Length: 87
Image 1 (cartoon, rainbow, N blue to C red):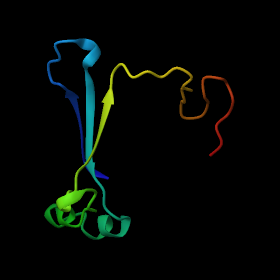
Image 2 (cartoon, rainbow, N blue to C red):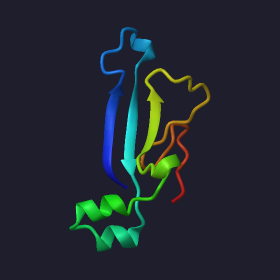
Image 3 (cartoon, one colour):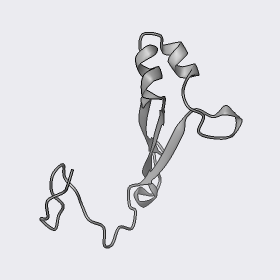
């Protein structure tokens, strides 16, 4: 993954409950990432296509006020219920 961005959407929301974020990034195979690490333009051309028309930027929209009843929060090693997460 490279060229990661996290932008507020919309930039200046009129209603705070309608705000969120858009994460966008490109992905490339590990081997190609290693081979072209010093050549950013080549790395961009080698990024995987993720959509129609040779689209290479993958985007995810995230709501700030998403309904999450029943969700379990995770930290790096435990969840909110106290059980240990297996690695």
